[in-house]
Image (cartoon, rainbow, N blue to C red; front, side):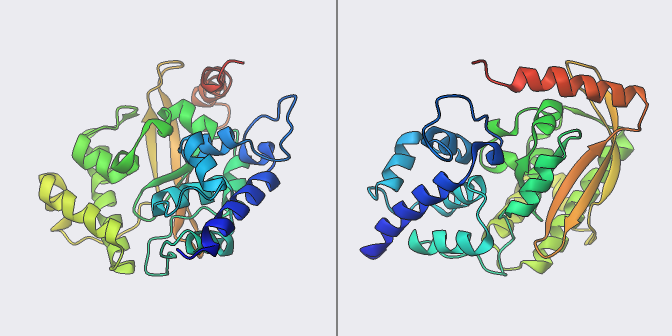
Amino acid sequence: MNDVAPHELAVILRAWRDRLAPEAAGMPRGSGRRAPGLRREELASLAGVSVDYLVRLEQGRSTSPSPQVLAAIARALRLTNEERDHLYRVAGAAVPTSADVPRHLTPSIQRIVDRLGDTPAAVFSATWDLISWNPLWAALQGDPSLYSGRAANVAWRVFMSGENPEIIQSVEEADNFEHDLAADLRSASGRYPNDRALAELIATLLKSSPRFADLWSCARVATHLSSKKIVHTAMVGPIALDCDVLMVPGSDLRVVVYTAEPGSTDAARLDLLRVAGLQQLTPAG
């Protein structure tokens, strides 16, 4: 990183934080706010970094943040693709290319998820890494911010840890879902043969999960698009939902949306979860 880059990194981080209204980032404005945009602690929370580290970045005292940190900051600040690329350059990191699995959430896609407040929605990459979600998704599935590293990847959780406790599935449904996941990863590996994270994920699954290795040997190529799921919730009981995967043209992201049949018991339970579950997720004070 040259002598100018730390200063430029500090300048753009402060400027981009100041321009982002708290409401646009899903944060309450509250009273007594002096900052025109997000507070440092709010951005740190959204990006999953410490406030102290963010202060050092904004003061030019910390250099060379990791690509993972840069990606999280870019998403939290709702940067455009061009702004994201500039952030990477001045931070001394390699700018993601078309050979990499797209993992950047553009402001327009984030706004779509924000507007889907009445239904659980989340955004995943082509490798099924969880990128973003709305509050009702967290109320239904559990708080995804508690996941770290590969635990945020659906295939990893299914094949390595066997964790998907919220979803109630028959043996046939679970089998079909596993087939779809393996086929979807094979499809992604064909589109992004040079993506290191994807290659490492597949290699680890092949080595450590006999079930994944067996499904991989079938050489099936497909994309998981829709299914029906029963989600168990401790608060309102089981909810039967349609799960649809909406592909985002030009980015290879997928928006996963759960809906219930209007007028059904499941719709009523989802409404109740929307009220009770979101209150439970909202910090006091």
